[in-house]
Amino acid sequence: MTTFSGFTEKDFEVFQIDGLEERMEVLRSRVSPKLEDIAQTIAPDLAAQTGDEMFVHVAKHARRSKNPPDDTWAAIANNKRGYKKIPHFQVGMWEDNVFLWLAFIYEAPNKEEIAKTFLEDFDAIKQTIPDYFVLSKDHTKNEGISFSESTLNETLTRFRDVKKGEFLVGRRISSDDDILKDKQSFIREAKETFETLLPIYEKALRT
Image (cartoon, rainbow, N blue to C red; front, top):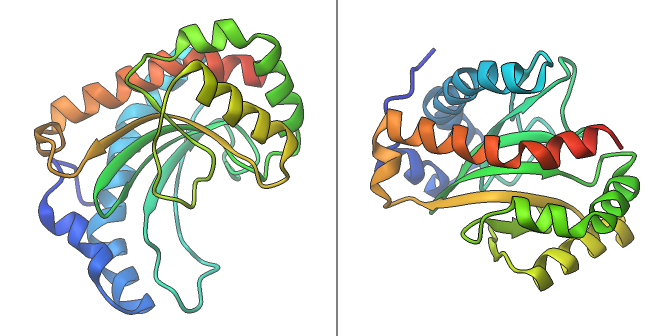
């Protein structure tokens, strides 16, 4: 497996390759192994902090038949068989950024209950999230919503009320940020990001 030594311009240029098979070939050979290596490095720390065994799942984009993916990721979750229905951590990329998310996506069968719990304990959730973190309502969009009390309330309310509503919170790091070029700096940033979000993750697991 390709080991992660830092991101390069060529990694982000993958998303400019035309054609599903052509892009997927380079994703599989160049980008996905790096993301998997990062996730495998982080997973033991999350396991130690949560007390659960953590498993790495690399995005396969298997449902695609025509359009090539505009992003890709590796997920870390406490279930060996899958991650989309449960709270999980993601490290991934779009063509202009790397993202580090604690993700609650629409496939979660108890997402309404999780959202209600978060809204009922809104102040504690708000105080857990640093000001420089960002939010997203949709994992399929390259978006980072500036964190504030109002955007958090709006995102959680939508997560509760809209069938396709999602709640992602974490970091988006621009592709030209020097931290991405250095393995140790990026791994440290990723670990700190996920550790900061652990109280929210654990609250969801108790819901």
